[in-house]
Image 1 (spheres, one colour):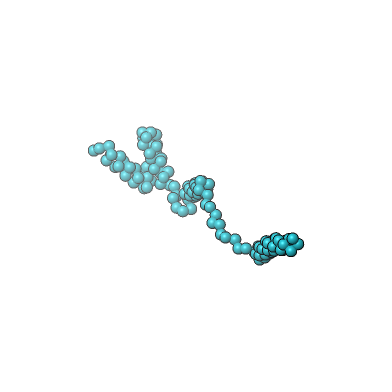
Image 2: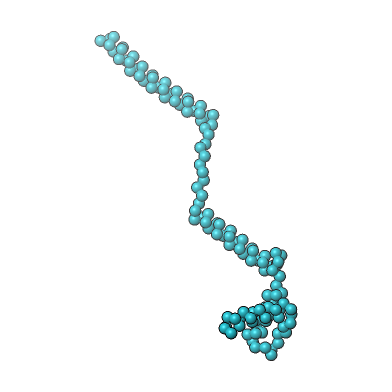
Length: 125
């Protein structure tokens, strides 16, 4: 028998012994066998249901790690905020129109003043 086969058989028998509570761990057994039996009995007694404290603590640790990873990825790759075009308010629109009209009026006054000044100079000479 190979070592692998004997280990499989030993694990199977150990599992059967601990499930049926046939094992009494005492000092007459070798230390390795005592350790294996104690561990197998401990594993058999642990509750792995949803409400188990061990599973709850593992779940909490995994959730914390996932949250930390998400925060780290956010820091590495900041999402650029989509810039939506802002609507022009009524006051800003009126200000733009009035400013445009005032510049147009100023330009027209400058043009007509030059022409009037040139016409007046011709009349006097």
